[in-house]
Length: 153
Image (tube, rainbow, N blue to C red):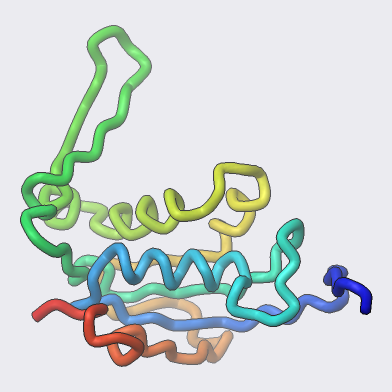
């Protein structure tokens, strides 16, 4: 028995559409990270970009459990002395770019290497319900119905 190792000719990429309205952020991010890496496929090869192209809409309506909306703090540094900045998850969701919260959650669930940075280019996140990828005819993936814990009312 030989171990199967995929080549670029074996890779078949699909387009997946996910509606994030009412879905818990961490559960959404873990499902999307698995799809981006291609771990849901039987022909998964760790050193190849096997994953699908994922479109997430309604990212501004994602849910957080507990008091994470006010207590979860995101930090970054400007590069200048004393330049540490922070925002709560609620401030990011109510701000100008609420899709960044979903993007960073998915990015942090991928390994920190060159391949995962290339796989992140297959992720498109939109705050509203509109997206410019209708020509690719994406398949709808219903994350809400996968598990009852995936939603929050």
